[in-house]
Amino acid sequence: MQDLAGSFGRAAEEYELGRPGYAEAALDALELPADAVVLDLAAGTGKLTRQLVRRFARVLAVEPLDGMRAVLERIVPEAEALCGAADAIPLEDGAVDAVFVAEAFHWFATAATLDEIARVLRPRGTLAILFNQIDGDFEPPLPEAFWEAYRAGAIEKPPEQTVRTGLWKAPFPGPFEPPVEASFPNPVELDRSQILAQAASWSMIAALPEWERSALLARLGELLPDGVYRHPLRTDLYRARLR
Image (cartoon, rainbow, N blue to C red; front, top):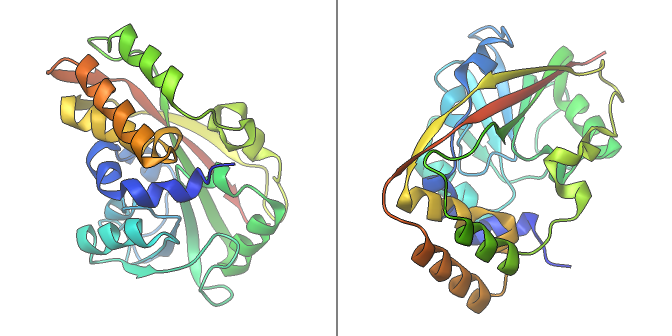
């Protein structure tokens, strides 16, 4: 099976160009103090990290993929970037007040991961999981031929690696209290180049053999008119406190 999670390293620059940030209201809802020490786990290119450094005294960012981490270090030099994985976080016990995982928890949703996150949290620490989810169609809509070409050429993602199935919730509560859920509007505007970059960063495309990936992206480019597209998103927040 293709390494869908590992494929992001092949599309780090596209990820940075095309992926959105997260609703500031979701971060407000956590009510964490400004002097908190926080960890952005599986930080990618730092889409959430750059929002965290504006809020908190110290921000650590752990990312396993060299390509993604290189962009993170360039874009968010204020954060302390570290190489590491969700099941092997390179921090001491009780090192942080909160752990954030944005757009990534479904890739490593296991009991062992929850235990490792709990290990690096201080007593009563917070785990905040965020996902940007589609909350309506593009305005104006992308051509149906664009989606047909995508469905025909992209890899099918296994259900356990898809956010919408909810299978990633299976390890909870573990060492945590049951998560509390909330949603916040997060609409974005993307131009043609950003939509194509976002498509290139989707794991179902990024994991294709290079010739297939290039051919599919070229075809998508042919089918997408120039313009600015509004994308109604929402940020779903799942907050869990350490028992």
